[in-house]
Image (cartoon, rainbow, N blue to C red):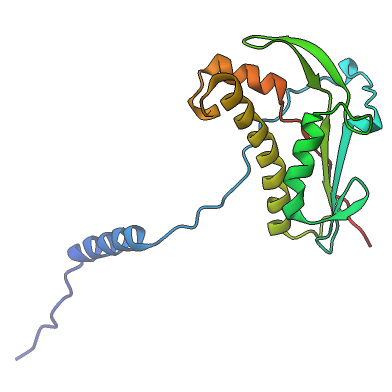
Length: 188
């Protein structure tokens, strides 16, 4: 009497594999990288590029070295102090000669307003820690956002986020987000 070896049903193996795949897809968590929201400038053809002369007083220089030390306007500074210094630079409330120049512009909802020519220049070394770089970025963006928020409440009595699009555009013309990021340097 010969015995038959029982066969493993192969039809259900595909179903089991599919269910395992779904189980792992549903139960696995995915880390989401946080990033910086930046609007890139328009592409400019090289032949149309013109030399722009920017006065030293119109540049707020922020440097982060490989040791994660912060140098603001050639002085060592703490990240916690960066936002207030950037706000003062971009606002120039007393028309200080060491802070950026202002030029008159006709802005909807505001009329003729003196607008800063200031630019925040950020540069870091390649060895700068990502966390430090992000912290510096956050402080610089927060400075501009706070200036916009303060102006919105003063002019319209509302938060910047609650304003109509045209009102927000007017405030952005007064306090533009001019943060220039230079290519990181590799130090030996």
